[in-house]
Image 1 (tube, rainbow, N blue to C red):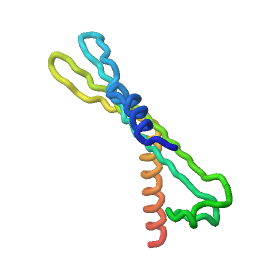
Image 2: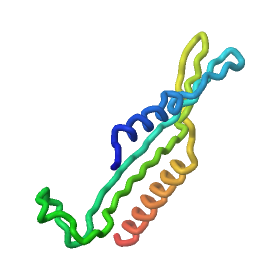
Image 3: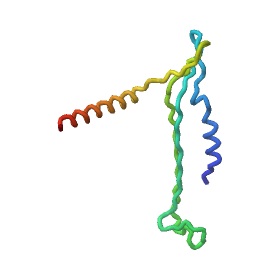
Image 4: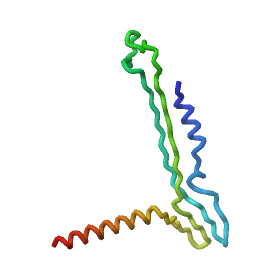
Length: 123
């Protein structure tokens, strides 16, 4: 049978703070600490044969010897979001510029301009 406690233990061993904050890098009197965003999801399921009942009664139990179903899955995604730059004078966060965010913003701007141009033509 599926052991949820074992799954929790294995996942817990794999999730570490080092997935979010990378090892510090010393260079030119500065300390750089990479930062990322970690997201994930897990799921599972179980089924019974068609025509069977989920009841606890012996009369309602699965008598057709059909296979039961079971499944599960999960995944993690790690995405760089920037770095912390630490100097003797100050500490600052420098965000990572991601190409997909730039494309989304350009698409939104182009959509807005297109919509406004259509509105002006009608008037």
